[in-house]
Image 1: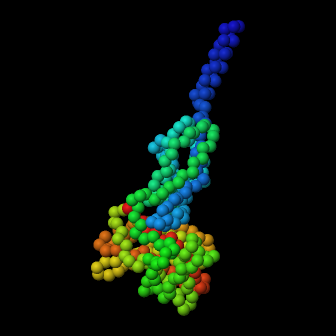
Image 2: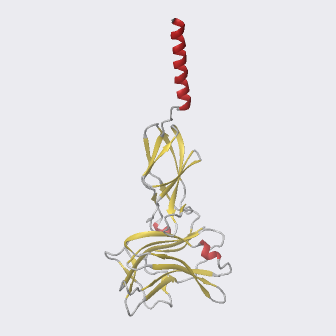
Image 3: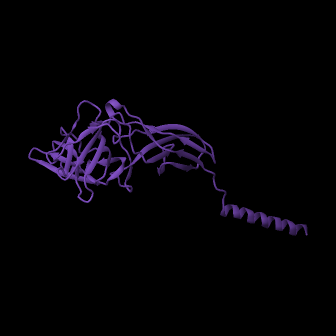
Length: 283
């Protein structure tokens, strides 16, 4: 009888062990919470800190955890003290499926203590890399402006500071039946690199779609490079526009002039475009 009881206990223990092997206990993760990433700029040389950082690229002890749209709580199978690195992610050309870390925002580094089952919140702050070159930075806040209307435009923009402004002085273009086309660009050609990323940043709102492009200036003539069309929006938005591929089309250009172009849509009627914080950046 005793032998039978011992046998039953042995069989029962075996099945318990087997179940643990088949269904091992899961590790309890720690969580890293990221509400947003802030940008700090030197306003005198880098302009506004207005941004549209949408994603965090997170690394723990130099190992990538993934790309996450914020706000987010990210599970981590780790505890104790660990090195954290975060990169600021953006949406390129306003296309939600095209997400990259912005190459001109420096890394955020920190050391944090993780506790299994608990949430640790980090608040990353990033800056432009010190080597970032601002080929153009126009915030319409000084006595003179680096943006002019082009010959294709039949109207000029004005600088406003009212309820429609974004941050202080803001560029504003108004189109009607007598003035149906607006186009502006830098007053001087920009010297932009062929082999490095080049982006244009822009804050805007409008009641009509408009386009972004570049004029490639060569010794013989000027060429038009269309980049993208931007939809109308009643609210202020920020966009990061990749100019790199357009520049590569004209390796012999002596300079480039990124432009903003809008035409009156008769279905919409009189058009309004407000724009601010135009930057062209590269290394």
